[in-house]
Length: 185
Image (cartoon, rainbow, N blue to C red; front, side, top):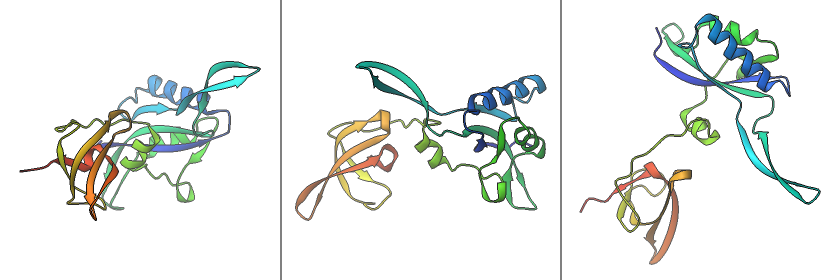
């Protein structure tokens, strides 16, 4: 029974990332495994390259030699862990160009939600109940319990800058959008 989806990292031969991703997508389509393998991606970034005094936009792989796959996982009571099915492991592991999963002894280990957000694979949205100039309270982290004024909100990078008063001085803190909440009067 499918309970959740987790992102896994698949190691490939360098230069085979796109081919591996395409082959996995074809297997998903041909075998009707859309519920088991939700997404396959090769993380890329667009950079500006200057060559011979000409600027051009170039796409580069962020992690050469790796493909990310979002797989269905179910709870294994014996091992007391969530893991993918043996069929999916076999399909991906035996895809041409794949050398294995990232993890100890080749045993697949899913990425944590924090790693997924940091890698930019998935974006999570946080609905804000505060705006610039509002008084907020920090709800976790090193400054848990401190209050301050919202100075800047950067929704693209999921950060907020809060000015707190510490030792008689105004101190700016860069925090995650979900680390603060409106202060209760």
